[in-house]
Length: 107
Image (cartoon, rainbow, N blue to C red; front, top):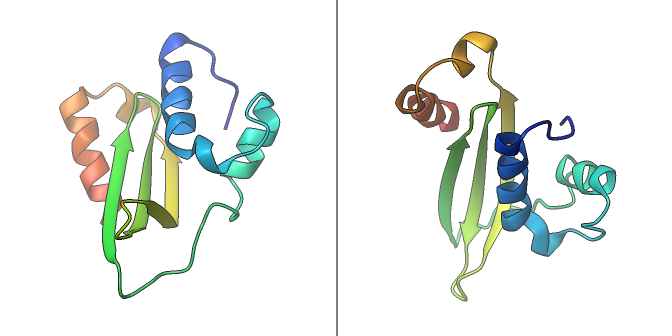
């Protein structure tokens, strides 16, 4: 993941950190945050007795999907995640088309 170069990319990065930040140490160090997010440290084992949640998000730069278990106490723990960078052609598409890509990406 490159360093955010504009306000839109910074907003996407901040949203990702807002979601995953409670599990990450050293939030003030960009390189450590990125290496932690890209590692398997945030992932848990699948629990077949818990509800499964699939979530995806699309930005102007890429797609991200997370499959999580939802627990009785209201917490969610990620089981698997995936991300990809949009091609230059995909990045030019309107938001509604990028959100369609998001739906297909999570399948």
